[in-house]
Amino acid sequence: MIRAFIAAALAALAIVASTANAQRLETVIFAGGCFWCVESDFDRIPGVVRTTSGYTGGATANPTYSQVSHGGTGHLEAVEIAYDPARVTFDDLLIAFWHSVDPTDPGGQFCDRGESYTTAVFVDDEIERSAAEISKQAAASALGQEIATTIREAGNFYPAEEYHQDYYMKSPARYRYYRWACGRNRRVEEVWGDRAYEGIPDHG
Image (cartoon, rainbow, N blue to C red; front, side):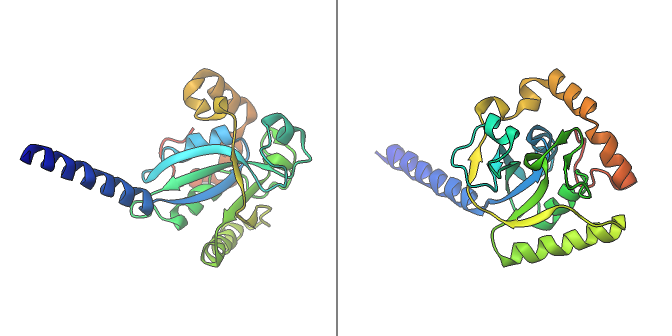
């Protein structure tokens, strides 16, 4: 009887601890061109717990990859990042974001062109908006160029099809070839120099 009571109590504590941990997580959505690459980069940051590729920013409900990539939905390829703010901050993630894209490009990213591949930071409130705007100004100052990346209010986020999730792990050879052929790393290094991929260990 006592053992059963102890087991039940431990199970209840585990549920409470799990719920508390879940409540401590926060999320941010970045659009940084191909969502495969954004997932790969941000999964490497300590404190990032989960990344989900998807679509956001448009009015079309439950869009497909085909619809978004053909244009007209208003959606961008984006990644929802769940993170532990006790281990990595919103500001840290902003720094990693700016240094993993070409924020001066208004027409897409690298070899991927069109609205769906443009860059954006999606914010939940005015505190996040202020932090994002400050970091955007810092990026502009560091590069001495106008920043094309927009700061937008977060809205509905639609997870992409399952085959897109963790693509860099499911098809590593194809992923690495795509990233190289698209020129992502090369262009980021041209833009940022020795600050390319700041905050992202072992990017790619």
